Length: 229
Image 1 (cartoon, rainbow, N blue to C red):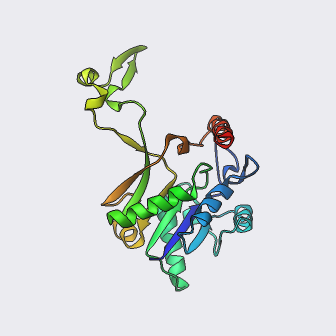
Image 2: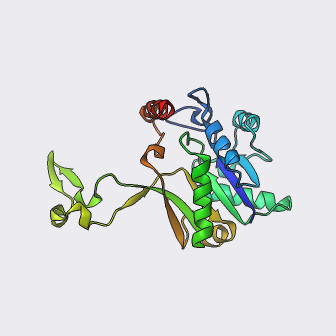
């Protein structure tokens, strides 16, 4: 089965300017996504979808393809990831290149490893799923959640506070790193999380949002700890 990695890297970044190519521990952030995809050896093509010439140049330097630039429609603040993926699929189709499945990889994933991608891809094959989404387990039961009203704490669900953690079903959250999905399913259901989506649980050390400068500094500290180990 043919599979393409699509790394989505728009030029506009509000909270961390030029985030996708900002230097992170010695190289542009997007380089980590490209290298993980290429080293996994599961993709027929590793490409970057961008509207930014500088991002395109850096992506090519690290070995990704940029066969075309994003359209104005998919470069806007209102474009969804699905819009971007659909455009890429259709443009490749016009070049007589079609793929059975794809992996959408976000550009700020310095903790993503080739092995994680390979195992997630194998999970989709073995479970016969239409898609695979990486998730991370909540460190504490979400049933014990609290809320603040007029400065005072209240249980979100008082009945659940008496439940023992071992009696509660573990819950997971989307880590927002990558999504494997069959191309046919994506186009039919028009969603990143279609029917028969399998969960792939990753280690907490691989989970890291990088949306603010504080997130960025935390990621740098975590990366140093991982490298020291």
